[in-house]
Image (cartoon, rainbow, N blue to C red):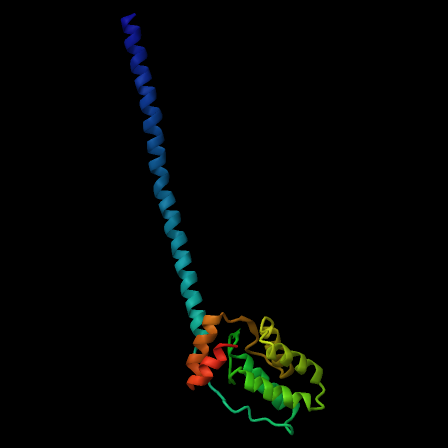
Length: 189
């Protein structure tokens, strides 16, 4: 019986050792795979962040054609007014390309509103509806507004595909509108 007890003890010891040692071996083997997955996920995340920063810089970079005076009055054409409104949207929208910007500030919005209100433009109702949203500080559809102007003008490059975040808009304003009072007024819109 002693031999049988010793053999049973040895078998149990081997089974226990294999059980715990095997699981540790398997777990250890799995850990490098988990670490590898984490490294891959981090690399993808870093790439996404770099792309996002790249896009942010593209959206907020200095562009040409900055105007402070809207250059239109009651005798201006509908096309000239739409050009001004289009440029005003550039401070708020994401687009692959932008050319020209006019500060989107209450004074500018009111000037354009009064011109359109006193006009006989074909698009008067559409333009007034857009300007009323802007007067109220509602810019949740500014990308659609931009694309309305862009389409009207026969745009082929630079369709808006989103709206800049508040921080992106502030960076755009700082990079493009140098007058201190305009920067604070435009970023409050």
